[in-house]
Image 1: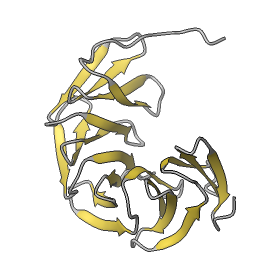
Image 2: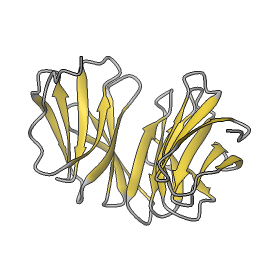
Image 3: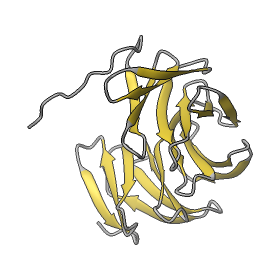
Length: 209
């Protein structure tokens, strides 16, 4: 019916990213006020995640819902438990982090950055792989449902599919302007791209739209 169920008020600046906990009982928000917040569905703040030096532009829950990942304009991503304890900082990007994602098994994380790369990390903060191939900002990153490939969206007007060794499997080209968002279908057989050219594209893994 389009009825507003709840409003979540508490951040001191605009909200850049939101996510549901996998069980659907809590939500996560990331804000330019340099914090992320965990809320229950009544609009009550359960936890505030403080530690970034700049705004939080991307947030994600681990698949088991027990950890939180944040990406920031301070060039780092951080891993937290739900009590607000900072477990790890992922340092290595040369510009702000635009997108963060957990692997389906929860053992690795993916970051995309304005430095034109994406990076794969283990939970100890070790950089496992850098995905080099885009010529402009990487705006969005995601894992395939089986966790064997990753998808990136870029200001170079393309999306790219990669294996975990950093090899480009496929480049998706048709958009006339930057690609800002990417997603896999639940079965992993098709991908969706969103672009500032005012269109979205649905593709098979061979790059056919």
